[in-house]
Structure formats: structure tokens, C-alpha cells
Image (tube, rainbow, N blue to C red):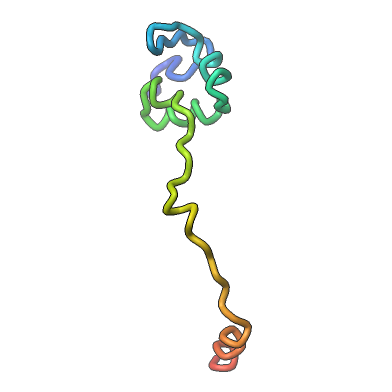
Length: 80
């Protein structure tokens, strides 16, 4: 059974000695309430649920996708 109020927007949450409602924390941290709610349902505590999204790693930012050349596409189609 789900715990009542596990992610209610009016739940008081204290982070670093400051108490705000969960919804106020989400607004302050520029998070969509649905994101916070889903994190809570997946088992995250309030601190982790209200953590701003991490930026993509530099490894992912440097990756590029190169489509196959038209010749390779035509070759593979003719082999079928």
C-alpha cells in the first residue's frame, strides 16, 4: 500500500535548515512538479527528489552520429 502524502505538494520539507513546502522547493529549483513526484514514487528521498537535473556528461556532448553514406545504403538494399 502506498504511503499517504508521500509526495503531496504541501508537505513541509527542510533542506539546509530552511523549511518550505515541497512545491515551493520545486519552483525555487526550477523543477516541474511531475518530475519531483515521479522521483518520490521511485523511492528517492526529498533531497534527491528536489535536486536539479544533472547536465549531460562531456562524453555524451562530444558524441556525434554519422549517418551511413548513400552508397552503403544502396549496397545493403541491393543485397536483400
